[in-house]
Length: 494
Image 1 (tube, helix red, strand yellow):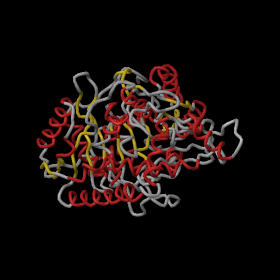
Image 2 (cartoon, one colour):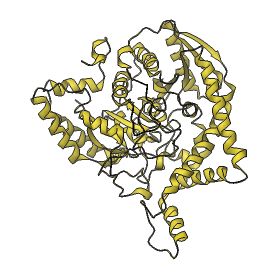
Image 3 (cartoon, rainbow, N blue to C red):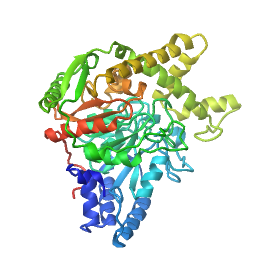
Image 4 (tube, helix red, strand yellow):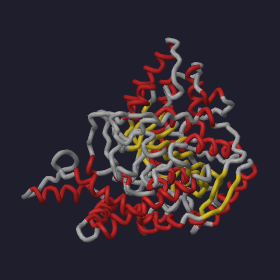
């Protein structure tokens, strides 16, 4: 029934669990209890979950067991323990964006992606840690504390979807949904040795994703394998009439083409992506390039000069949109409200000062500045012009090439605290990921080796809009070419 099993594609962790529960080798309740026990045991060390939804998980597990015993042919995602980033709305379940501003906030509706997964029988283990309002790339700005890297707990998991990456890497969830505004799915995937997909803007509904920068935000996936990534993406990518940015014409079908030959595929490597790489990342990337050449892909080096301005353009645009989006948190309608004040102006000012953390305040101030009179032309409008130029440059590339190869991040996971002491250096680590969001392109990060400390290194593949099938085909063939998967000693053992 499901194409990933019928096209000679290797079975990922999702299908392994699907087979276990459908063959009744383990009940869904027993499986869910194993995951909940592992979460309770390991979470205090890893900082992965900020809300464990044990009661809801077990109720869904019991429902799945009833469906299996009745002989129903269930979807592969049915009964599989998973997790959602804490900025994806879940009706009646606290959703805080890991900010004091939204402590206690329980949405009155489900995000479209969660509606879809819940209808398929997904088992939600809990909500995972993230940088506050998705602003950060190390998962250290969370009001709940940092999520740690399962490969080395003295290092970051990456951000902003670090909790989801930590959960999947440590096998405290089978897969996770996160959000990617400038690399927030792909960077933690790189640091934690996972497959992280940032879909084309509009391919997956954003309804119910609490906004950071609306023109850049996109819900993405974190899995241990490309086949799991393809199955999950195909399950959540569809037109949502309630989301004005949702694509009407796109129909996701990546599973059926995973095993296609890539011989003759034309891939390019922009020189700008190779600047400032650590020695270990450079070595792993060059090895990955040789692997594609050995598989028959045609690879050429070229230049996209506009990439040099992508990072400043991104931070101007993202902070400007954040300034606008976060203006709604004023202590009046919802969110934190200060206890003591003498005027409405003081109430709003104190509520925001108390509710937001330092990084969020920094980006709001930056965004307000570039939108202010006298500076909007000098900064914001120039950044918008740069965005259009970069998008056109990518369009020209994809007239000739099938995909772009780059490292995901110029380095492997830094130590905890390192980014907080030098935020500018931390921003620079987004250099390889932000162009994708600016141009509304899809990209996937997957493991391509390890550094001298055994930490995962990520390879990024960028494709043209709505060409996720091409991306995941290239990623799958690379995954099959060698042992690049990395495992940890945490979580559930089945």
